[in-house]
Length: 223
Image (tube, rainbow, N blue to C red; front, side, top):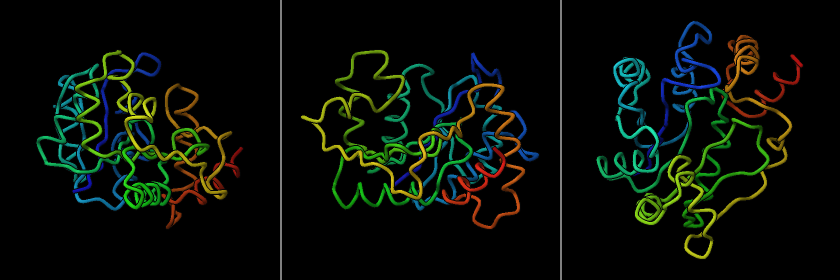
């Protein structure tokens, strides 16, 4: 089973409450889940913190996501709890501050990961905030047993790609049509949020608004 697992929390030091800020009339977190619904997967789970569960639960249900609450800082263990709960074999990892995920790039990197039997796969040089990671569930379970550094547990995947002697790693440059590392699409600051509002408004009527080339073209058109 392949599952999209989206990590999210309600508190943010740089942009407080950003998950619930409006984006096109819906909370930002809902827009992230909406984008992730265009990625082929068997299951979608919002992996949140205990203190955000009650506010996030209605959004997850509306978006068609399951929801699971776990440790705030040990995000790696939060993922592993979801893996064990649903018997997941491959994880498409996403984060709650990226409402402009390229669904086509996500599906392709996951296909490549499966074809290569890679423990970890992720494109380099995508716009910041456009990508996901495809990870073997068994590799995450192993990392949870062996990773000791707080950074490795908070950010989930560093233990994998920092240990290529233990795991098969696939980190190619993004295909040319998506290779725009100079573009920033994540929402981490007030300035990011204001740009996201403008970009979402410009994209809202595009039928292929979750595809990378459309997002890049629209972004460049307003900058």
